[in-house]
Image (tube, rainbow, N blue to C red; front, top):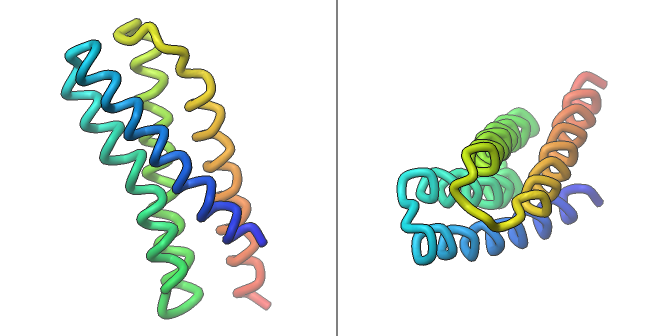
Length: 118
């Protein structure tokens, strides 16, 4: 089920984001963008967890929509870090993971909306 996949992927992504945050702050002394990535990147999984306890289908969609917004924000920060060359670490795996999460969230939201209309 996609809900279990997104739950696992968003949790693993949050762990990678935490390690990336540590790299940015300890090795690059980059704090501002690092905090933004930490906040938005770990928020995705938290909102997915909240969605699993939603009070209704509409609440479920709302919480996953917030997770999707956080994923898109995280993707923005990763692109910005890459293009500004602040970090020499390869961002592509994190960007790919983030894009996959966005695709999964979008698919779950669309299918839930479709089933809601039935």
